[in-house]
Length: 135
Image (cartoon, rainbow, N blue to C red):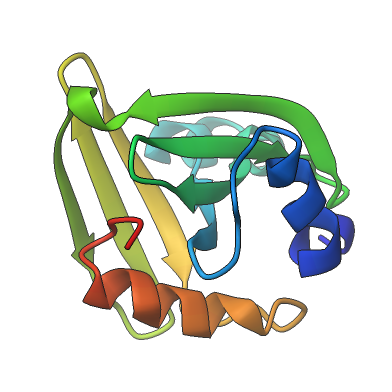
């Protein structure tokens, strides 16, 4: 996860979308389903989805990160108008961020610390203080 974990790579990526990205970005992942680990534990690792989440006033951008650690060039957004709730449950090494929309529920695992991304711990603290709002 080298390229996507460096601020000098993801800041221009979000800037191309017209978004100022600084302390409003987190690395997160959607884990494989429990049955996938039971049925096919080797391939379950490949179904884990990696993202950079960028929290803005109008939306939350989900920028895809490849397994090799590059920016996938694909992104999706969750408009704030569609979001019903955002909850965060802290854990010892990682927390669980749950975003509930009108039509879906997204559960992200958010590590407290990422060794190659020193900004993760700081940004997580700032976003928790802001209740995951942009400012």
